[in-house]
Image (tube, rainbow, N blue to C red; front, side, top):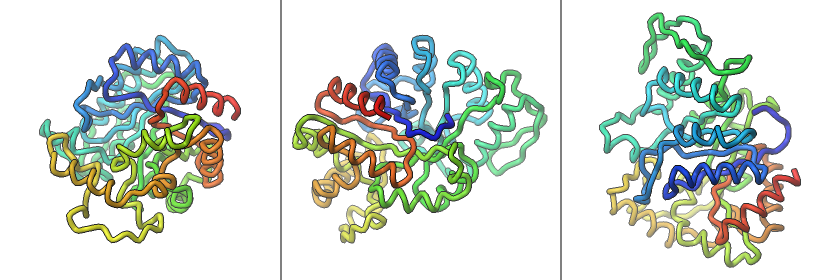
Length: 343
C-alpha cells in the first residue's frame, strides 16, 4: 500500500457481529472512503461473543468491494507459515492486490485453551516472514530455522500481480520487536500511545522506516460526537483495556503501581481468568484518569479529533487504524469519512 499521503483504516466490529454483518460493514467503510479494513485475527476474545474466522470474512467481502484494502492482525503461532502463505496467495486471486497481513506477539487466549504452544514469539515471527516470502517466489526452497524447516518446498499458487508479494506488517512496541519491524516489515503497527511516545518509538524502529513507502501505523481507539463528555462516557467503562501499563513510564507517568497489579498484560490474559480480568478493571479505576485517557486515546468533538490526528501526523503516523467506541456509530462513521475525504 505505498503512498505518501496519510491513510485511514478502521477495525471490524469484532467480536459480536455476524459474518453478513461484517461484510456489510466493510462495504459501508469502502463507500465512506476508508483506505483499509483491519480484522483482529482471534479465535476468541475476552467478551464471550460471536467471533468469525477473519480470512473467511475477507474472502466474502472481496466479492462485494473493489477498492478497500483488507487484512488481519494476527500471530505466528496458530498456522504454519507455508499454510498461511498459501491461504494469502489464494485470497489475493480473489481480492486482487488488496490484501495484507500483520503479525505480532499474539495472545494466550488464542493458543493455550487449544494446546497451541505460545513461546518465543519474535523468533517465530521472523522465521514466519522469511518462509512466506521464500515460498511466494514460486521456486523450490530450503530453510532451516529454530521453528520451521523447508526441504525443496514449493507453493504452486503465488500472490496475484507482477510483484508476487503481499505486504507483511509487524506489530511491535518493545525495543527488539521495533528493530525487527524496521528491518523485515513492509510496515510497523503499534498500539495506542501518546504522540510523543510514538515519535520516540519510531526512532527505535530504524531500518526501512525512513522510506516513504514504509507504513507507520497507529492502532488508535477513537470516540467522536458533538459533545466531548458523551465521547468520554463510552471510553471510561473500558479504560482498563485502552492503556497498556508498560507504556506508562515511556509516557512520563511516574505512577507507583501496587504489586498486585504488576505484570498485567493483555497478551497473557485468558477469558476464563476472572481474577486477572478483575485486576485489570481495578487498575484502570485506580490509576487511569480522564487526563491520562486524553493522552493515550482520541475522543471529543470533530474539531478536537481532527486536531489530535494532526498531532499524530506530525509525530510520524502515516496510517491510522481506528477502533471506534463512539456513542453513535453512524454519526462517527460519517464524521470520520469527512475527515478521510478531506485528506
